[in-house]
Image 1 (cartoon, rainbow, N blue to C red):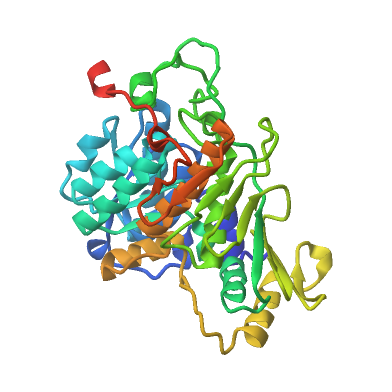
Image 2 (image 1 turned 30 degrees about the vertical axis):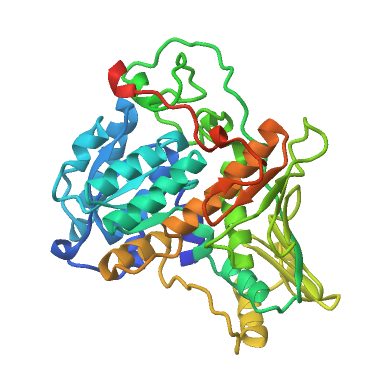
Length: 441
C-alpha cells in the first residue's frame, strides 16, 4: 500500500518510527541543525519525536518517571543509530527540567507534559533563552495565558502551540471559506468535544517505583498517587489526568483546545475573544455553554460534526480527514466517509479552485508540517502559525467554558485586557491553586 505524507503524519502518533518522516523532510547538515530537548516522555511526545528527530537534533529527554525517561532516550538513540545522517546517538536523560534548560547547546524545548506543568516549564524555558514548542492547551488557567504572552514578547522568543489542526489543509480551507463570506454572514459555530473538567477524587494506590511523585504533581495541589494520573510502566494510551481540573481541563481543554481554536480562526478573533460566556440552564449539563462575541456570533459546545459553521448562505463542516461544504442548499463538496467517493484532497482542491481562487483573505499556509513550521520560524524569527497569542487566547476560550460550567454563572469578559468586566465573574477564577513543589522535595 502506498503511504502518503498525510496518512503517515496521522498515524505517527500511534506507531512512531515505522517510517521516518525524514524521507519527506529537506535534509539539513547535522552541524546546521537546531538542537532540541524534550520534557515529558508519554504517548504524545512519542508522536512528536519523529518529526523533530528528522528535522532537528534531539539531544536530551526529561521525565519524572524513570521508565518513560529511559524509553524516550532509547527511541532517540535507536533512531540516530539507524539513521546516522541525521545525528549521533547520545541522548542524555534528566529528571530536573531546569538542569536541561541550563545547557547552552539546547536551542529549543518541546513540552509534552500534563497541562498543569505547561506554563511553568514554558516560562522557565523562555527566561533561559530557549524557543518553545508546547502542547495544547498552552496554559492551565487564564493568568498563565497572560503571563506566557507577556514573557514571549519580553524575551523575544519563538513559541509554537501544538494546535496542529491549523496546519491541516481541510481546516485552512474551511476557515478561508468562512473568512471570505462564501457562506454569507455567520450566525453560529458549533463545536463538538467532551465533558468539562471535574475535581479529582481518585483513591490512593501503592507508589510506582521509579516515579518522583512530588515532581509529577509539581505546582498542582498534592494528593496521593493513583495510576490513572500517571500510568505504571510504558503505556500507549492518553492518560486520564486530563479529566481532572487540578491537572487538566477535561475534554473542554483537550479536544476543545483544537476545535475552539479553529472557531477563533474562522471568526478572525485570534487577537480577541468572546465578550460573554453563558452556561446551559441545567447546572448539571455538560454541553450547551455558549461563547458570545461582540458581533453577536455564538460558538456553542454541543455534540456534532467537529466544527460546524452556519452562515446565511450555507454551511461548512470540518473535522480531521472530513469536510463538507454546502451552499444555497446544494452540497458543493463532501468527503466524510469512503462512500462519498473521490478523496479529501480532490474535494479540497476543487473548492479552492472554484471558490477561493481570487480570495481576499488568505490564511497562513504551512508547507511542511506543524513541527516543521516551528523549526523554520526559529530560523526566520517570524511568528509561527499557532504562536503564543493564538495559543493563549484559544486556551482562554477553553478556560472560560470550564469556569462557566463549574460555577454556573454568566461571565462578562473583556478580551483586550483578559479579565472579567461588569461584575460578571470573580477575579480569583483567573488563577488556579499553586504550591511550592520545590520546598517539598
